[in-house]
Length: 92
Image 1 (cartoon, rainbow, N blue to C red):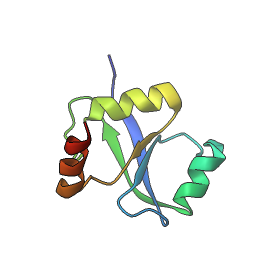
Image 2 (image 1 turned 135 degrees about the vertical axis):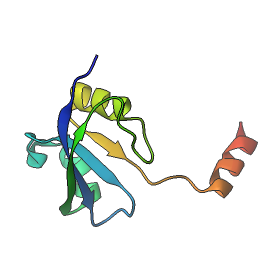
Image 3 (image 1 turned 30 degrees about the vertical axis):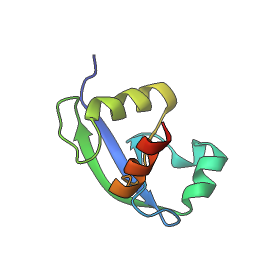
Image 4 (image 1 turned 45 degrees about the horizontal axis):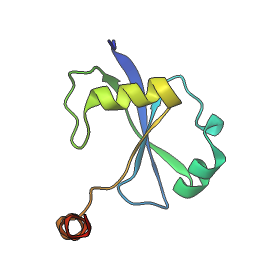
């Protein structure tokens, strides 16, 4: 069970619509180098109080909290386009 956690959200300049969620007290420079280099320079977007019940646009808040607890961050990738999803269904 998760309690409220203050989370800072960053975006990188190399990947559009990709966001990195970190615990507010976390140091982004401690993240894996491969992750940091793929995102490029990080820009802080917002800080918010996150609870499992909070509504987020593209992901369940509980999933973000679990990832932060487990690996120290949550990486939100851009949404897949409808045409890509249709193509994926054809492959399976």
